[in-house]
Image (cartoon, rainbow, N blue to C red; front, side, top):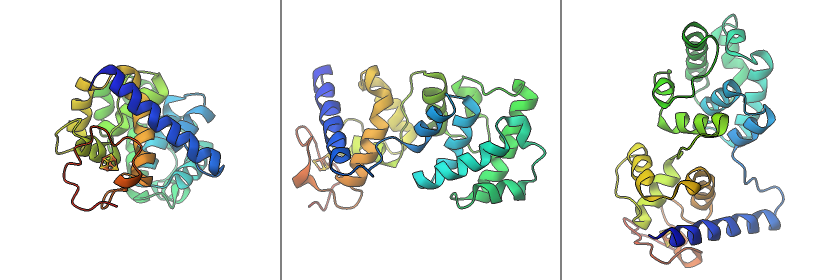
Length: 227
Ligand code: SF4
């Protein structure tokens, strides 16, 4: 793919997303963590906590859980005296809320003890935190520190492989492979665009290829059923 090809794909996805919004004002086109980042002025702790909460959790639930948690613990030190059970109650019904409560407490303790209460703006340091993988770390670097990163979830991984942009077997591998081929100006927006496209058109089991707005060049790898 040339830079112009990438520009064309991204522009088409943006127009499609904007069209959805124009037809239905209730459609959310901004991921929950981005909303939290804007609400808390890119505060790194708010972004990290909401990113942890967002894993396997719907956007609406992430927003409510983030607000409840950050009201009680606007900084890592404030989370330390709150019992784990109470943290779990605050963030319920976020997916895996008990595990997340435990991880958030452990993360807060590490930040206080090792980083003077700050969130490190460093991929390797973030990956050392409990429950933080590359997807979470990239999102924190992008949203809190305005650094370059590619956030790869199941939709980005699936669509990138279907189209033949990459040939990988895990989201982490896809992120590293996309870093080699995707022009940097598209790193940040590609996640939200492909998540929305993967939910609406390029669905996991049977994609709507007949309605695809970016069919050119798609290899449809491992697509056995399509509509
Ligand atoms: S042509 Fe089908 S498989 Fe390829 S991106 Fe479009 S919907 Fe997905």
